[in-house]
Length: 440
Ligand code: PMT
Image (cartoon, rainbow, N blue to C red; front, side, top):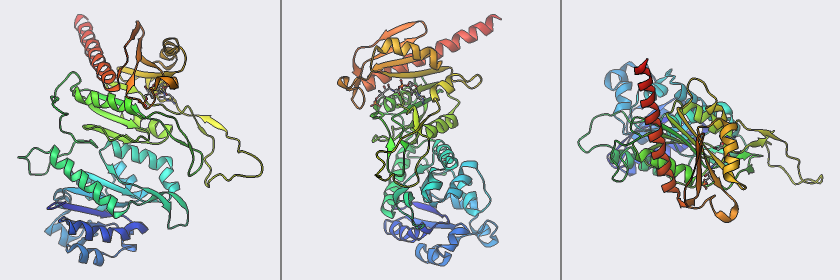
């Protein structure tokens, strides 16, 4: 953080008090901190405390003649190395997702061209509301990074996910972004730059050139499991580790593609050079995929839960005297099938996976037809094969004109081979299409 300039946008939530400690701790680490307070934030912390701790004016008004002439809202955001939004309330996140600029805080965020780190804080019901999930998915696609929220007791007396991250966590997330940003920026570049819409480091991968078989293409990949909540603490999930999908995203980036990875809960670090959108449920994944389209190639490697609980209990389900509770399940949207059946806006190459415990080729071929995919990558995931969570995979690539069975390979090799084949397919299809047009 040393020598870096942080613009802290303080939102209107009880967690705003943590920002005072953040200012002190960031300054101890050598950062300059300037603060903008929303009107609601001023109900929780005063501009005076913020100004005293930051030793900078506290900015509150968009049309403040004195500050506009001295600094101006554009300079305020351009002079920062990092914009931190904390607490990022549901309202602030909604404004950011929709590009609304109706006060100083939202205007400087919109005018900014630097990385943005948001520390959400809100009641858990607001956090899980579909509108907030949609906004989060959009913001992640736009390159906004998140720290927290954490699970715990809330000011309203309820328990759940929605507590703002602790100051330590915000400091480490901010330091990591500043480090990444410095590494991604060429040494000679010092002025303000437009940051790519990417949550990862945008530098070319280890030795890979910035041009490759997928240069100029957008590849969308889903990976990992989805978690479908039953109550605030329990969920329905599966054993996918996300390794295969993450490897595909990394391989596509290595071949030069712009990659969006929509990932369910995994323990894996975000692949470098890939815009990673983190989601939890199948419906979140559906929204994030929809927000990330159009794409030239879409690969659906996620193990999406086919069903979710018809109703999510607001309180932890108690062990009662009436025996175990009866679960009623309803169907989740089929993301692959929906995308593959789109008319306009369908990616030219749609690749699905099929996780089977029987005859993978026969069952995968059925999925090719029922889901409307162009290719299905079928794998036998019987437990003794160790595919879920393992580092190797043995797949059958099923196309409409035949099946190719690959030997057991590392998931990285499966990914690279698949992405090379996909690159060749889209180039050939494009060439054939332009030849047909030329013949007309
Ligand atoms: O994550 P790893 O531990 O590395 O393991 C890799 C893997 C086994 C998860 C991966 O190789 C794999 O097989 N992924 C697909 C898992 C799956 O859910 O398959 P399925 O046969 O149930 O679904 C068929 C296809 O429809 C898949 O592309 C799936 O992403 C998609 N789908 C399914 C349901 C749904 N509601 N929406 C979907 O998009």
